[in-house]
Image (cartoon, rainbow over all chains, first blue to last red; front, side, top):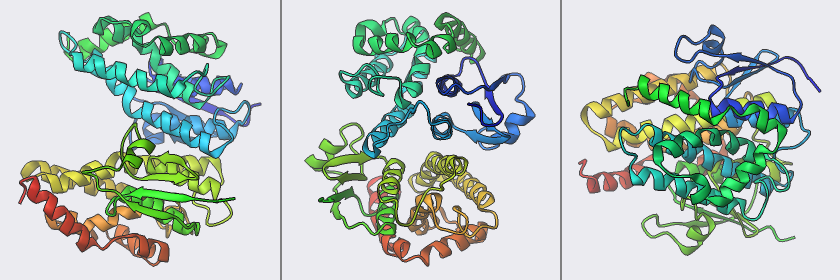
Length: 220
Length: 219
């Protein structure tokens, strides 16, 4: 199954790194995860491999670096084709890419708008977040997963962001389960998958991490 | 089998131009529909309800949105002619990275060179030149970003050129003086018939932008 050496420059709480880890796990690819200290001092390898953004994740396959999580997941899917994450039909593939792009443009910013708020979280920030999840519910429709019967590209792109939702719920004073039950049901289905359940960090730990970030940014 | 292709577009949009070049490279016949962005058609709103933006490609009634996704779709469907993306997965990841970089960096920094004044405009100009120099570095000694052949990154970047006359005039700078390698690459692209035909005249874009700047109270 292994085709060469695979290294992932990583940060445990980063939903973007989690995407790569889930994709690699789904494909049964062995890899070495190297934890980066994003606040203490980034490694020379990270700075050399991602000189443009200096961010994680970076995937190194036989020493060749790739950056940007959605591009990395796409590469993993093409290099280790089984089981496939992207659909084989060109139209369905374009739709999957569209929703992955939507998630990239919208979800994490909305998450950050909530936890970065000083004092009470504005209603607009909460409503915007919920509205985005409702749009994703529309894309999901009656399917179990965005990928259909099984985990697909969009599921892998979306599910890691959900481990930040507990923090969002605590600060925002709402529950995703109440506001977007269909989305919540999809989250639960994903968590029943072994790869997802063992890779996603405990949302409580992420919440504590977010509090640390708030202290660092002088928000509390 | 009927192969009906419709493009909802707006003539100076660099994102729309990408799709026009891709279709031309593949020799695909299509119907071009100009959208009035102040009065969007019911078809546009129906085909792109999420973003309500152009370009939208409609192929046999099915909509495709977001220019990089549209171009990749075109490359996959009409795969027998003029391949746009590399065949090697690593090279493909690199190509996608650079188009993503262009989309993250070019549009916003460029927009600020004609929508702002004073210090903000100076900062936008500085950022824009940094972006161009990064791209020059990536190009290196290759004739195109795709190597010997015009490809996905070239196609995604060249449409910005028809806006350069506008940026240079509003921002009072000259790209060729700062980034001659970049302009040399532009000239190579313009030798391609598909590109030369798809890019609107820079002065026409400037007239359009001047009218918008007047409305924004910038001149």
